[in-house]
Image (cartoon, rainbow, N blue to C red; front, side, top):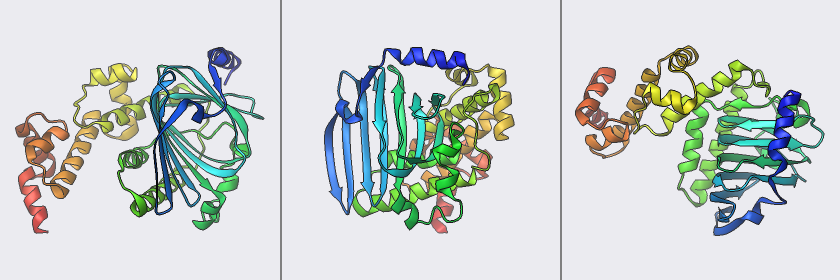
Length: 334
């Protein structure tokens, strides 16, 4: 981050309200303990924001979820007394992270993620009002790391230590990661099934991180980095609600890119057009629903973005070679 940006950041955080702990602005609404998994849900106090924070904790694994629209600019100071491995996924929002001993402020933005080994650090996190914050944060204790042998082959504790990476650890969210996060955010399991599900999804996210981590990405944002982030945001926008048929013009306005640039660069990065990508997602979702649900075809067509079931049937047959009805019947016979 250059001097101008650092100066601007310090001005932005000057008038923020400081709090010592997140829990001082939360109200507990639900507590449950079952099969060794402790689950708590909180709502934000009305004067601070509209939304919730919840977490599940068991056997050295902690998974917290934020979803809030803040009414106040906030700074949360803190000290981490324990060592742990942290996975964070910022689906929406922006954070300014200050860590004692690191000169530069870390700008953590929407559609980014990180994997870090944190050991007794002190600092603060700043949040902006009128900006939605949606984040999934996973912390793994040393015992959890040892139990799953996470450090044996990939030297996670050394390779992903904050001291070593400093400010070069942020990565864009990939489609597979987004799918797993969506599963976590919509999960309704309880007890043992919840434990198994959350542990398996955590290990799956770790595996993805290790597969995609040949070269850590610099936090210093170049024009190319900024463009790639915009393209991943486009991808997330399409995938997050398939019932909406976005036009190129609508997407370009929401993402903040020129129509021509959006179409050209999306095709270059993902090797398919926006239309091809959206259609592939819709057909995959439709096949899943046809195979695993008893929903009528007209309802499935609406779920995947076709208001007219005739148009859906024509599109499905064009890509799959059979009608939705025949596809469902064939699956029943298998």
